[in-house]
Length: 347
Image (cartoon, rainbow, N blue to C red):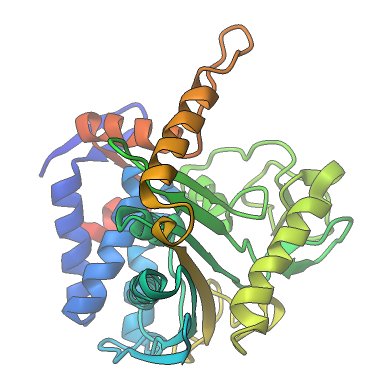
């Protein structure tokens, strides 16, 4: 099945892995349109080394489809709210489906107005936000994607969960090259990475998580909350950025605030929709200094960045370089799959 076992565990080539994910979602009843988008987004994450948001989430989504939290055949609707704004109703389906639709709408509106914002209501977990920012860049626009999620990150100097991991993702087209891509959680790490470390029984890095009393821990089994980006000294920065994601995705869209979410994991209720919100914008460079000018400038900028002086043994990278390098490696070596997902997908 295009699989290889090494010291890091099972590695599977992209094509058979994608087929296994598609088959699992189809078996759980997902419509072809929604499973296509969910598979695309998960494979984006797994190809680029964002394993916490990759194919390991297939089992969770299948459970939610079978339990009724996610509609199997959501009927998306788009409502224009202004010359450069719109709302997508996700109809409580797979969040990836609504997210790709919203970004496509943002790009179309940006072609007319220069910049456009599109919000999503009645959605669900969308995986790696970078997948949707990248979709805008591939269409020639600068893209932004964000969402708020259920509480799992302490506030700066806090000892209880408040914000979600609340990612911010940006991407921009680069002529003759792969896009500039920044995809970051506003927490120290995503909670899915804690779950991945639990599955692998591997310790967490220092300063990224805390136990139930708010004490910093490296034990993934003891971790009850994450620390905001910046950790114990500068976490006010991450906490502020997390609030920005909530402002755009929930406050602006009249959807669920972080502390009010039904937990993604661990609860007994898998039938009630979570009314998750997302927010996207797209900028068309042609409507500003011009596409050709933008292309020349970003090429010059990235050339200067990558040739900047480095520390001994270091390498300066632009956002996305690490992920594109990892994607190239995984084309050859395969995609690592954790033991729980190997069992679920029957790899």
